[in-house]
Image 1 (cartoon, helix red, strand yellow):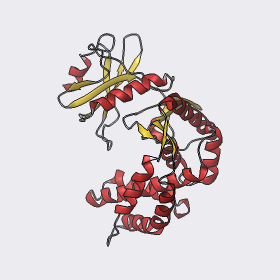
Image 2 (tube, rainbow, N blue to C red):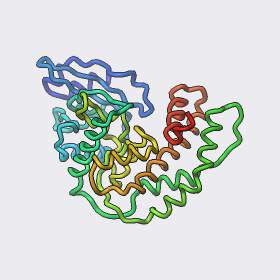
Image 3 (cartoon, rainbow, N blue to C red):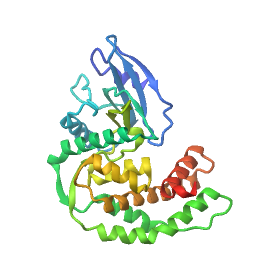
Image 4 (cartoon, rainbow, N blue to C red):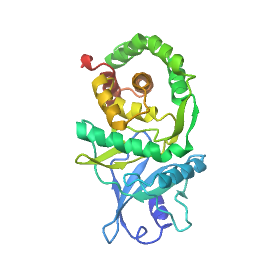
Length: 299
């Protein structure tokens, strides 16, 4: 098996750990996870994903994780060749320390404050690489909304509702994004895909920020928009509370626009997925959840 061949590239105690599949492996990314437990009780995570062309990007991400040096950020293990990336038969593997804890969808106020403090610590750790310029995520949101096209839909109430939502908000949101597009802001490495499943808690304490495959250079507000939009949608009161915990440097109006744009472009994305993959429950659930976050009154 490929996973056995990858593990054999590491030294003890990782190579002799008891490795078991973790989760169902049926997510949208195609990644698979195994949990390894060594004889002395230490735990590790083995992640496998399809081979990508830009392996240097993965190496750069791993270097940034090491630079962060935060207890809730994973530490990568090196294989016998000193590499943190192992390739077996068109599959990329890495092994990191296991971050225990539970992802929380319905978050409490103390957990929110802890998450915002942890995220700010991560951003501060990566701030030495910062520069100023237009936020790339805004250009991506504009492109996604500009290329969206309405279509005639019959007998599909979820997609009909999604298209109505996009049509009602698209023009106003595009105008707001274009007004921000050229503004110079602080750009630096960010997590890039921070939603509730990637923040782990034990009680009210953050034990892990995980899944850093999407790290990129962008505005820190993009991380907040992704995470807070997932937790609260466009709930202004909770966004204000989150910003108090995070600290200075984030413009509330820009953040609100970023959240709405992220949710709306995600609706467009998953609406297309549902058209090409009809009757797939997890796609329907994802789309309905996005619609609820954009308009809680419609539940």
